[in-house]
Image 1 (cartoon, rainbow, N blue to C red):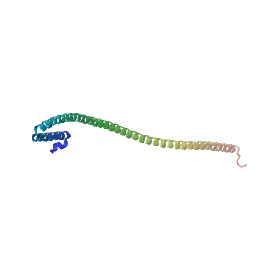
Image 2 (image 1 turned 30 degrees about the vertical axis):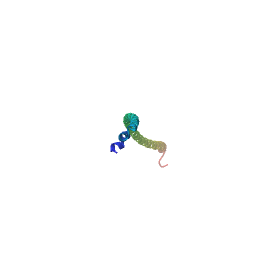
Image 3 (image 1 turned 180 degrees about the vertical axis):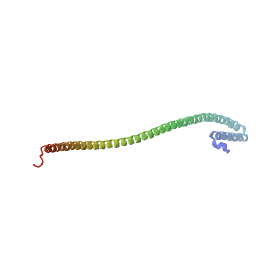
Length: 170
């Protein structure tokens, strides 16, 4: 059997029909005329039936080829749509990743600013405390200075008074 016939069922069927027709023709030559006539009628009937089957098979083949073309087109369209969807999803994912990275960078920057502000606040609280303590010391020292000055003035005043009333040699 030729290679082309092995790959196509309808071509194989046509080949079988052709071989059968040759066999019938050969038998018809060898058979007496009455038998030949009967066989010929049967042969014509079978040949007509086989031709009808071949016609149906060829129509089915055309339909299947048409369906195959439509399926190929549908597959190509589905592939194109999948590629478009993949591109859109990838683009969206890329934008979201970039946005996430930007937000992460902003968050890190804000965390550093918060840490800096917390340190500045803590330092301001310490400085305020030192200032308050220094101011209280200053006020205490000023009071002590005022008291000491007042005492010294009082002592000096008393000394001066004592010197005015002081009579030497008495």
